[in-house]
Length: 126
Image (cartoon, rainbow, N blue to C red):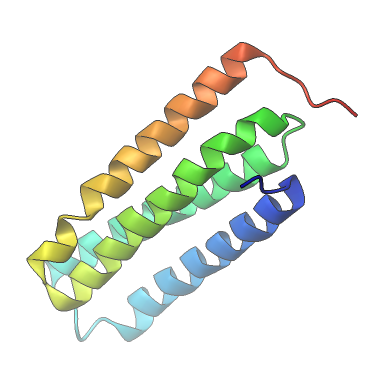
C-alpha cells in the first residue's frame, strides 16, 4: 500500500505529538510508579520515539517519493521499540521486553532502506 507524502506528514506529526505527550506524562505523572531503572528505560523509549518521528517528518518533506519506503520501517520501529519499552517500564513483564529488539531491527532496516534508496538517486516526476 502506497502512502502519500502528505499522509506521511500527518503520521509523523502524530508520532511527534505522541512522543512529546508520552514523555511529559512519564516525567510528571509516572514518577511514583517508576523506579530509577524503569525511568531510564521509559526515557530511552521516548528518545527513540522522538528521533524517529523527526526522521519520518524529514523524509516526508523530501522531494524523493522513493525514500518513503523507509518510513514504514521507522514507524514500525517506533511502535515495536518505544511502545514495548513504555509497557515494560510500567508492568515489568519480561515478555514485552522481547519485542523491543524487533523494533530496533526495524529502525536499522529503515536507515538501510533510506541509504539504499537515496543511493539509487531516483527523483519524483512532476
